[in-house]
Length: 70
Image 1 (tube, helix red, strand yellow):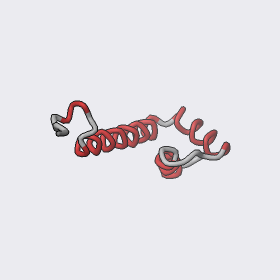
Image 2 (tube, rainbow, N blue to C red):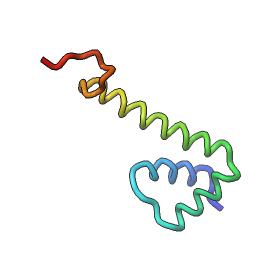
Image 3 (cartoon, rainbow, N blue to C red):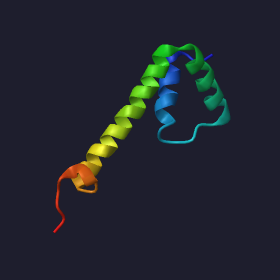
Image 4 (spheres, rainbow, N blue to C red):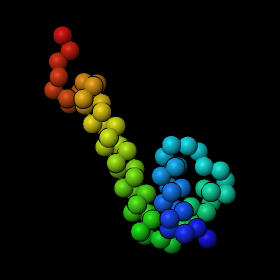
């Protein structure tokens, strides 16, 4: 069984790369029983999406950015 530290590290890495079968299964099992690590995984995902949306906003590629491209 993975520790919470190992599980959160894998949850973070899973956003950047495909995990191996053993890591995926171990993480899934841990997340089934650990609400704290599920919350951490959800926070990692939220932060990634938020930063990407903010970056798109700064680049002017977001329709809601309010920037005009002349």
